[in-house]
Image 1 (tube, rainbow, N blue to C red):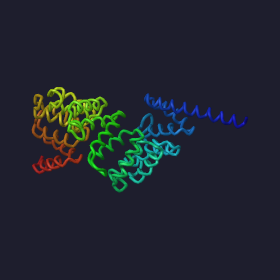
Image 2: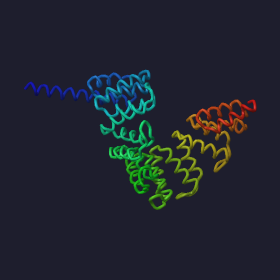
Image 3: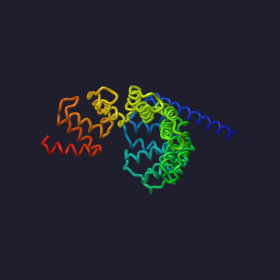
Image 4: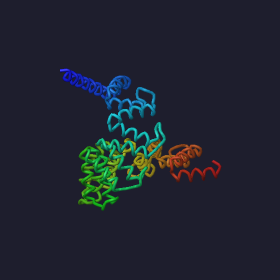
Length: 351
């Protein structure tokens, strides 16, 4: 009888803990961060890993509390020690980004490997990325493939996508467009827009499939509807070129605009160039400036460099060498060599 009572108590405690954790996450998702913190602390103190994980996210993101990476790490470690894969994964991310700790790829590997061993698909995917890029480990496409496969089997779409990339380019495997198609289809069916976009590219160029612009359009549309900026961009290109659709610069512009608004700086630059050169639209340097500014604010050095060009040449703005230099300088700081070269030239001319 005593054993039965103890068992019943354990069950009731478990139910209470689960309820606290569910409420904790619901409050977080509703962006009621201060209330979430109180409830999540109760869940965490009852040894619920998701409660600890959510508190770590609050501190990492500065939501309802002052941003504090050290505190975030403490709670992610608690979650990880409770066999919560996302807790281990998030510690790995702190080490990867050098947030509250010194950047350390060895530590990244330790924690994301723990996550992967707990069948956390994102952990396996990120472990694959380390081997793919040779970060903290010797580059090894075979190992990358192993972890991407595990991630994909755990329904982590990014693992499927990267497997597709390995097969498309023949990294560590024999190039095989059919396999690339298979894995991108898996990702697309898991609602990963980039997988749908990659499928579209295979159909657009006839890689491993019969060239089919209509199929390409179908997959680009699906990707774009999932807010994948590259899908929107590729869809716009079909309309620019009249591939599988009637050539339509306005429709192309609509999709390019969507891609730019999804923070794809290279597309913002592309639209800016269309306005600067009057391609398919009336030449308009003011509009070009708007799009170059968007790209520059997204830290695309080429966008800053083109802004500098407008100010240097007085196109759509009053000519101002000092402002031009500022943009060239920002482009240079962002690693764009052209910005560095023009900045130096203007300095030599005394501007």
